[in-house]
Image (cartoon, rainbow over all chains, first blue to last red; front, side, top):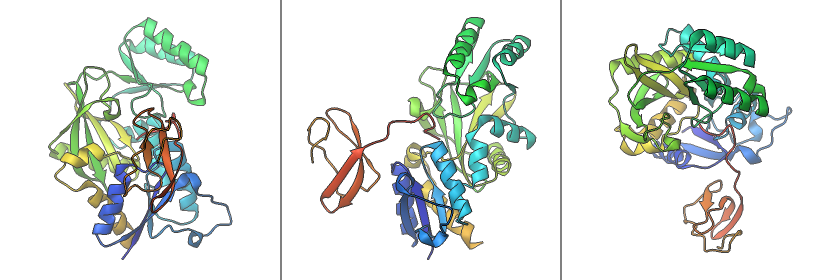
Length: 285
Length: 55
């Protein structure tokens, strides 16, 4: 019998499903709230109930990332590893890795100042999509179709002046149907997929009201998921793809702490069970 | 148990766990279960959605 430690900061149905399926597989779980856990440099792994492997499931990206670094310091195997979380959590790092590993991804332009961004856009032309390098649930992702929108976005960034506001991530606007595809990858294997349909707007995030619908996993998707997983460093991922009219499937986002509540209701595979099995098997190897 | 914010009745399921969020049906405030021993439940103000929240 093995034990999985589920690290959370907000106990959602996903974490409860993982707990239940681990138990159904005949293994133990410990539930650890990262918000109330204190760790110091003299701590040993045995000071905590981390079990054999930890599943990092914090809803707060930075909390999860920093907690993962502590887990790895204590030699606790963790899914996902720090490098995977870091690679997926920053859209620029993620895009560069996708391209480096020959995963089809939208053409993306990077600038490192307001003036650099304006010069870049003048060269490339409209439309483009601007995305914050760190962010989720579609927040801050905006299509830029004209100079007025560009000026407004740059002005807002100048006012907020956060450290990441000086990094401009600009992407080609993909001509696609009003939906994208979310594939759940467990150890590089595509286990379930859904279409996320826009309700008429530009974004297709479930958190923003997009309608989920089961999607058949094709050989092309399996291949892209395997390559994407290798590029990010493995683990459990949510791989988002768009259907470009000319270029075919493009991977545009990879999620580290994947949400699967909606998909679990309609998927043929038992998603939390496969995740729990993967975690247990990862420490048996 | 009553809502610490508006005093409305809060329905806390028997199988609710520590760390789970309970929303008040009347005022909409979110509370996190910080302690649960049988029917003895303690709530604390839930964290508000952070800029880095989400997948």
